[in-house]
Length: 110
Length: 112
Image 1 (cartoon, rainbow over the protein chains, first blue to last red):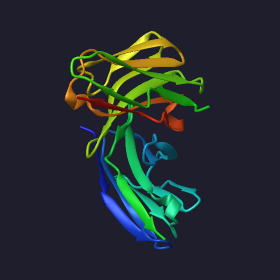
Image 2 (cartoon, chains in turn green, cyan):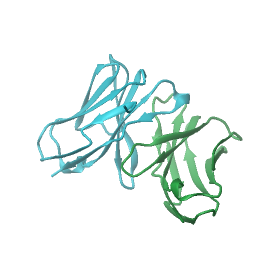
Image 3 (cartoon, chains in turn blue, orange):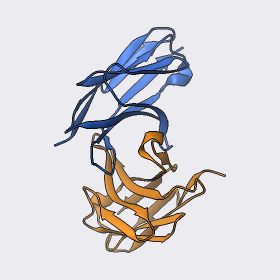
Image 4 (tube, one colour):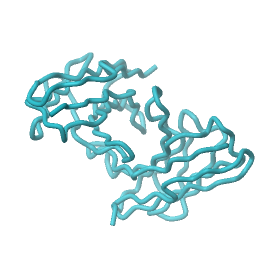
């Protein structure tokens, strides 16, 4: 059974304090791993897709990495506007949909 | 205008009532999905459709039905609403898996 576990559940950072969010997954053959950002009262917004171990993607202050068991979302020198819930999802080979974790709620304090 | 539009944004309904949530998209995507989001449980798939003639159940389809009226329209119905269907509902679309999903802004449904 596919499983996605995100940690920590919540994270408070001072502005400029870099950190990482973790997404551990169990899936019967990974087709892709996805990161989304969700602001309160809004739908998730697509950030990255990773397909194979060792792959990395970057966007502004965010960098996503992938191993065979987990993915990290690194946030470098975060700003208050980076505050949001970050969701991780996996798609198994042969599956028709994404399976989501419960998210990490990030708060960046000025 | 938003790429994926959900109506209504908020709805309060009574137990036993039938309710329809609507979703329309301007992305030109073939694939559409309905997800439900509950605190601590994440997003869970209710139904999905890969084209107008294709409807598939997700992991939590009991108590729900869907209709794909056109490529751009996908509606979700609760035949007889119950309080544990109180949740945030999201519609999403995709063209191919590598592009990820585009989500609507959600419908907050409360069943009293």
